[in-house]
Image 1 (cartoon, rainbow, N blue to C red):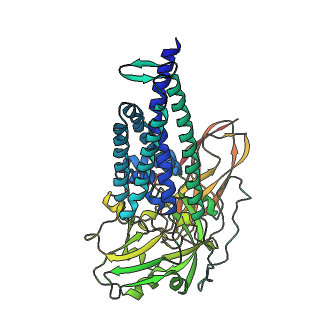
Image 2: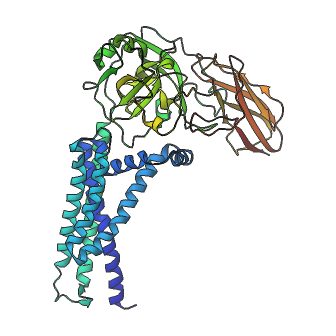
Length: 520
């Protein structure tokens, strides 16, 4: 291939790269602007959140099942890739006429701005990061175009094709401009990441002691059964499933909770006033409705908070309300059946988790915790409002999407060790895991079956109360071959975990976990 065709191919590749490069620079500038103002208004996050809102439930469930807690990272990456692919048209358009390329960037900017304004809590200022993105990208495109065209027509290597001039000098200048743009985008993007990380640091808060303390926490069987889930879930290993692509940064000094709707005395309470109320401390297991049988979206912690009924009684709940519509800092809504939240269970507005203030990822400064109910109807994080209303009058985020309104956590059990498809040595082995049954007296019994044989009782670890899971284990003399291991739980009222399979939608999964292992 002669030098001229090679130059044309390289020039075409560089033209296609111009759009993604200036787009990345603009997105980095917009992300930095959002990091310093409103992180959720970042163009990529705003578009990604809009995609989440309009994604059909089956697709969401598929993403959670296949990608787990990485679903948000994959979504953000997909949005970025889609934007940058669309931006590849910018360079060729700009080479024909700069205004064409600028117009294409303007369209992408409007899409991002529309996504930002679509968010429930958005205000006019939310479009600023998107506008910064567009202005920076267009300015960078103009500078690149000017720099590349600075090569004079008389420069060596000039070739004219179809009225456009391509020179070795033009190609070299374009490559230099692209390199500088990518480097600037990386530097600004890293600054934005640092700014968000700095804002997300845990706030120093001193929590009061509980007036009603939980019983002494028993030692689990973690060391006795290697590979079993810890009896108390460490904060950094506690599952997080929510619709947020960003991590809300709420200052305790500016936080307040409003209680309104069907109440006699609507009122607002700030963080200091809430901490001054009598506190309770409870050991409670939470699980997500999206958790499949044997899945990871379940965790157990010691929670500190104010009884939900204490907050509601102060407002004087009316006679027509049948739901608590809770709203978070960004406008996300969750419906909780009023009857279940006030039936005597230890429903609370939690401020502490495992002896520490709530982490930002788990709802700082205040979240709801209601034992026995799946999180999508009970565990609002970053909560700022409780509205007493009816299901007929108001529908929350998940209710609109067809999920159940009454969703008690189904009794279930999980095998932690051995892992599915594990290769084991013949001889004495240990099967172990966790089980939960928050309705009807907690976990009373766990049973194990080998290769479809009779159900035999496993040994139970200590109890931390009916609202908390229990560890279990069963010694097993393994013989060579492939084996199927299954487990099930029986609650305090004698109900046995059903073997009937059900998907998470609309009210939680069911079935018995069975895993396969190879013994040699």
